[in-house]
Image 1 (cartoon, rainbow, N blue to C red):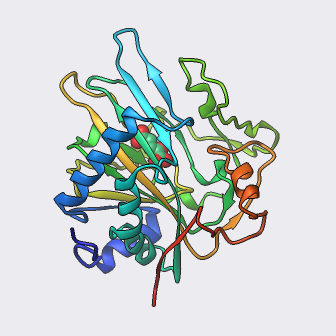
Image 2 (image 1 turned 180 degrees about the vertical axis):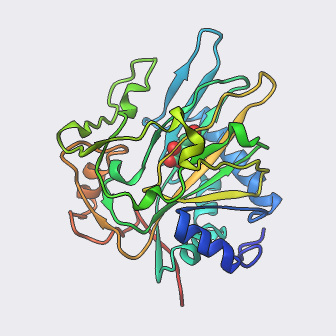
Length: 286
Ligand SMILES: O=C(O)CCC(=O)C(=O)O
């Protein structure tokens, strides 16, 4: 298994990430990493964490399953977090001195699932704050551009606090203990209506194969994905990474996922640099 970066990032790729807040990188992970993650995901789906839930179940039984922070229980995820090139890729794109791991999340759509993820940013929901946060989004099966996650380039630099979707609403089984957010008291603007005119927002997405990844700044507006043909599923593994300016923040509007309780248990408080075994430092420039 190749633990080194599979190929050097080009200066154009780094510039695209810095300018647009998103870049698609082809052939960054060799087949061994994909097989490892596929095995990990199979275990994860059989033994979900207590955070897991179905986000959507339609009348025909198509589902979208989500889980998060399973890496401590799933050996394959742990190996990926500590040994794969993902942290190094994040470090180079964010021009970081150190990279800490934040958490994993999986998005599993059954064949024919039409569910599209609502447009949103990530970082405003999180129990941390910082510009240098990113996600590595990896499909473990081939995905067509129209079914892959989509992004609004440059939107990571928008200033307003947006009124955003409460993902706690995605819960057809009525599972309790779901993280809730309510941005209404702090929102300065509505989230733009991207679907009304995707072209005018310059929305991008890509055809992707296993081994490719999209890295996106956690403040970029992203959504879509899904709308699958009956013979296509979509299994996505994501990891979230923290660069230099990130600090713990507990938000009055709620957090999703809300790590405030476990952070407190680990002695982390607002203003601290995320660390400890919960958010291990995985890469440093030296
Ligand atoms: O893949 C998806 O549908 C959603 C992914 C997402 O929103 C994320 O990783 O932040």
